[in-house]
Length: 117
Image (cartoon, rainbow, N blue to C red; front, side, top):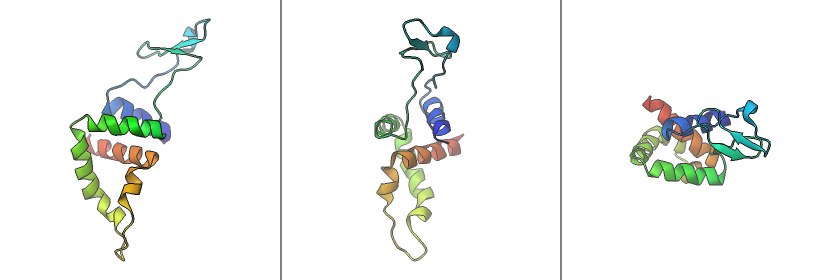
């Protein structure tokens, strides 16, 4: 699910390339080329963002903020998320903890984007 979410957000939300190795193109100096976009990477494999890390969380937060989807995401989150924030006995579960967890934030942004398709 993690790789599927990372790939979905990179491609659908930002129109980026989810890089794939081109094994037949490994150069003798240990470079790899993405078979979809042609970008070269040092080492024997291509690299894609991992939105489940703090670095990936920051990248996703900034990218979402730069789009017109920022406000729409939070409007959707409030509408869709309230039943997850309040329990039946009205005990408050801390909503910011969900948004500042890299894995949960990436998953919630994916849910939001899938609902827009």
